[in-house]
Length: 260
Length: 260
Image 1: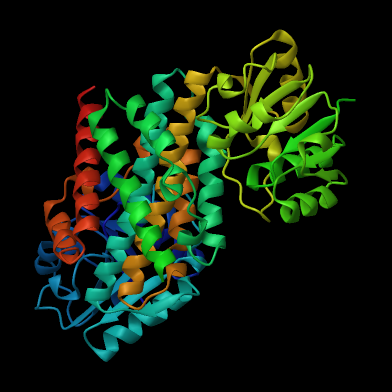
Image 2: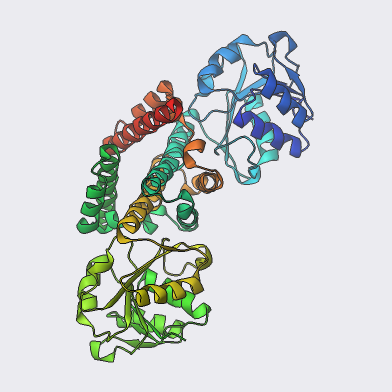
């Protein structure tokens, strides 16, 4: 049975720690600067809490789930012995981990985590990478215990996946916030848009390709409706700019498809 | 029992006709130029099919579910007697219906329909409007039989809702197509993004506001990751432009929020 220590107490750390505990692989320690969230998470998964370098527990695998920019410094500041050390970031190369560490690895869960929300880890794609055979096998074993979708992906392709995730998650959510703002301007509530948001997401994932289910005035090149919309956005130049830009792109893309 | 005729045989016509039939209010006739899709839909909901103006059946309510730009001409070309005539468009004013019609109305379902996909009409917001009391009461009764969320909304506010729908549905779906393209470029499949797409939509609708669950490099103003992403998009100037534009907007919006 592998001894695992999780470093960090944020959204990804929480999701990994609780999911490992559910699979009977609870971390032995949560190591985190933030004593409040760190000890709370440790208590929830039956682990001990530590916040000082000297307290770091011996382990087979250290999972570093801290902010991207802290990965290099955190990995350089702790003594991991000859254990395997994996970060959990999409956009960070495996070699951002300190070169003092021999068995560097990555375990990147392709999902957006929020504290307090349960997600089904079995369906989450886990992208793994290892600098040594030992490191790769270790993260493969742990990832396989959590999810049915484990993929070996190098740092360059993982960064492409992370960029795609920014579009489908962060930017899609921003489209929702624009919808919320436009409804609020006329005294209506965001809740009206909820069935449409869910159906749009479901339709895309149940289709063979989101391109095939693209609807709306942009893909029809419906000038009348687009002009009406631009007039309605005359006092919101930033949103008007986004509207025109995305509408043009949708139309250009659909032309390229139909030419094929 | 109201006699209903549906004019059109596209996505909205299909969804309305089948949903009315389920509620025991099957249309008596599907009137459509396209004989193939019109007669197929008529057969599915036990209605007769007609394609010539002289064949239009007498009814209490005519539901015009044709493309926005055809509403005016279709409504002017048929003889509805003194019946109620409602279009089903979000962005079209009620008065786009021919002024020869006395009882003009709107019944706009706020949802994205695709042939062959079942949607639960009970949760779909139906926005109604009527130029006369009789017209309003008629669409209120029919809408109320289909959905638990019937709202009286005038043409100006309905257009705002439709504009919001373009952002949360058409533009969100375009974000999915960009994600698909970026994965395809590195030989990976869109299916990897599906759990993330669904969780992002669920998280937004289950939160009090999508603004509160905004994550990613843009809202953190994470220069390092944003610069990396821009470098990755150097050969795709259109996508790079969208990336920078949306990232800046997300950051500007989040600053306004935190100042409050």
